[in-house]
Each structure stands twice: as C-alpha cells, then as structure tokens.
Image 1 (cartoon, rainbow, N blue to C red):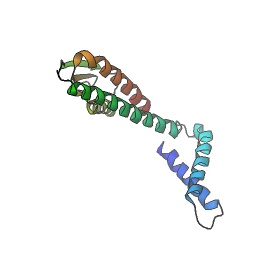
Image 2: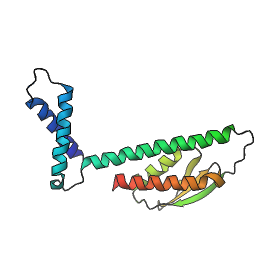
Image 3: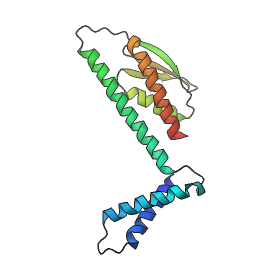
Length: 160
C-alpha cells in the first residue's frame, strides 16, 4: 500500500516536471496526482496487492464512524447528567469479539473507551472477551454492543 502511494507521488512529480511551465504550479502537481491514481488503478492488479485508496477510504470510514459514535454518546451522557433526578444503573457486562491481533483488540478497546459512558475495564488473557463498565446498563448496553459491532467490522476492513 505504501509503495503504491510513493509511486503515485513519483508520477505526480514526474508530471510536474514534464509539463512545460516556467514556474511549477501546485495545481499541476495535483493534476499529476489524479492522473497517477488512474494509472495505478489500472495497473494495481500487477502489484499483487489491493489498490491503496480502498484502504484509505476504509480508514476514513472508521474515523467518521468514531466521530459519529462519539457525538451520539456525548449527547446521551449530557442528557443524563443534566436530568434533575439521576436515574442510572451502572453495571458491568462482557462482550466477545472475533478480533485476533493485538493491534485490532487494542484499537477496539480504545475506540470504546473514548466514547463517553462506557469503559473497557479488562480484556481477557486470550484477548477475545471484553469486560465493559456502562454508565446506564439498562439503556446503553444495546447501543454499546451495536457500536462495538460497527467498530469491529470497520477495524476488520482496515486491517485485513
């Protein structure tokens, strides 16, 4: 993936040098970058790897998914905190994951911990079970499980 990106930068630089302009323009470089994307897309099957922009798009999707979940859970936490009578029942539950690698498990734990109202307390020694503390177990358990499943799917798309 990184080699394809470097090759794309090289093609853009080559485009910039071959276009006859007295002063190199940034727009010419970007035009060469876009042309390089097209060339690499046509030729990516010869590299034996996936086209690098697919992985970049999946990473962007994971970032946008995290931002959406962060805003949603922040709203729920703010709503519960500003309620005059605090009606929460905190609790702990487990979540079994299909992620295998250390990086994948760590990323999932961090993404969940960064969202308000839930904390990963511990990960089992085998790395496939999370012990999660939720601020309001009755209301937020299902939404946390949905978020974890979305994060898990997005992490799998990025890493594999």
